[in-house]
Length: 140
Image (cartoon, rainbow, N blue to C red; front, side, top):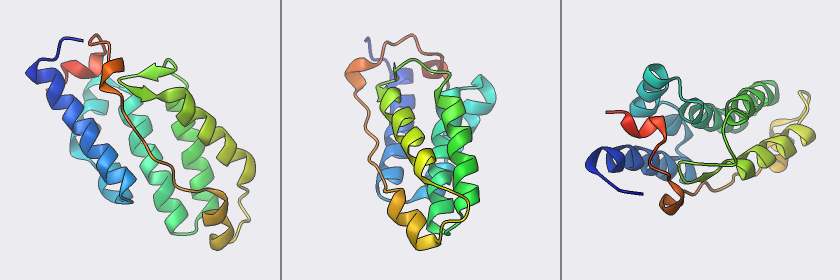
């Protein structure tokens, strides 16, 4: 991939999201303005899926099993629109994790049981797998 300033700017937005998500700052990740703007302008399933994924964990922190399930379903629907690897993310792994969580979460779980059944996972991005043709890279 040829890395230009525009590409690196959006890659930095994604890195910032990953840092927030992986450090448990789910509200900041879910409300990241650049991701929201990219989703609005480009209708990006990746950006929307990442924002919803962070909101899953906000519901888990609050012990809201029904809300977490709904958000898991919505995030999965966004990630289902993407190829197995996209913008350096292992999308297939994210989908598998969401499916596994959906299979073990019911609306009647206690907050403690919800947190036990849905462990946090770590997001990673391999910039070597960015093709350079992804529409999100045109976002300014």
